[in-house]
Amino acid sequence: MVDAWFDGERHHAGPASFVVRDGIISDIAAGDHGRELAGRGLPVLHGGFLLPGLVDAHVHLFLDGKPTDGATRSAHMKKPVEELAEAARQSARQALACGVTLVRDAGDKHGINNRLRAEAASAGDMARVRSGGLGVKRPKRYGAFMAMDVEDADAIRSSVARLAGENDEIKLILTGIIDFDAGAVTDEPQFDLESAQLVVDTAKAHGRRTFVHCSGEKGLAIAARAAVGSIEHGFFMNRETLAIMRDNDVAWTPTFCPVHFQWARPEAVGWSANTVGNLRRILDGHADHLRLADEMGVRLLMGTDAGSMGVLHGHAMFEEIDRYLEAGLSLTKVLAAATAAGRRHFGESNPILARGAPFEAVLLDNSPFQNVQALRQPRQVWRMKGRQ
Image (cartoon, rainbow, N blue to C red; front, side):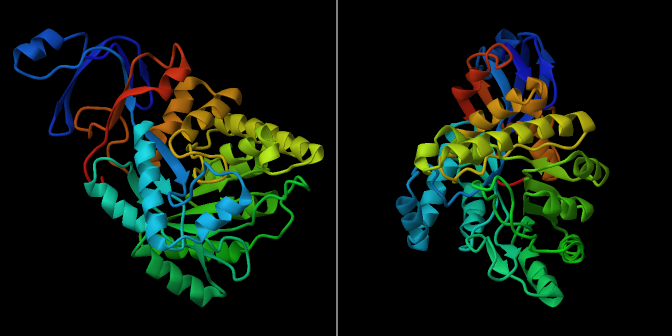
């Protein structure tokens, strides 16, 4: 019996009793039926606020977000694969402890995310893993730590076809990263519309959706017109691109956390006052476009880019939630982006807490609708078995 709950889309303010059998919700009844259920010999938990497990739609499990100095981060990338795999396991365990029951790993060249997906399916102490495996990029361009090179159309077709047999989704590295000193994306997109469309169409032909690393107006316009599954990061968005995303059913995972950390802790990177000003301008514009996307009906996911500098697995979800709230979204919409939206986008058959759904949930002591900080202290976390 819980005092109140959120099903993934709607807030239910009154008490409710959940009956869970073999990990499946067999009944939900309004009111406190704890005494009746106890009389039937069922173990009963009382009180608190229940919501679906959180979903972080963009992480890199093998990366550790805690170190902020460049030398330590560079040394981590050079560790043996088995050490990186153990780091990934620790990341998945830390995520689960924070109430994140499902993560989408956004790529690594070692295949660790595919290994973790299999391990987590049978291990109850890690968040479930949806894996982007290895992505695709152009030679000598950004993304070598998470993607393979494709030089031409034939390479796109053969590589995407092969990756589709291993990955849950196909990751496309469409642009590089932001030049924070310049306050802009200064390089050209790696793929034009024709080649990006070929990635999308080939992935679809093999039963896979695409998710795309992309920022900057030129790249975003290509991604939206190619009707990718989701745009990751998406800095320097505009209204025209958002309209195309809405019409083409392209979701958006804004990932505020890495940029916000560098704005809040510029000494960790050595940014100048001018660059800090650029970071603040970029964040403010991102928040404005997130609010506009919500108003226009663009599907919003929530991802943290955990593993990036200063972005801790699990804990970063609470920071990302704060950024969505600061942008002006309601808590109902923010929690929907953090729970049901990801599951629905990933094609899970039971994205909300309902009769017949797997019981994958977090119990809090208090309602986040009274104090959002209650999310940071889960009393108990339940994760479904296997992969849905």
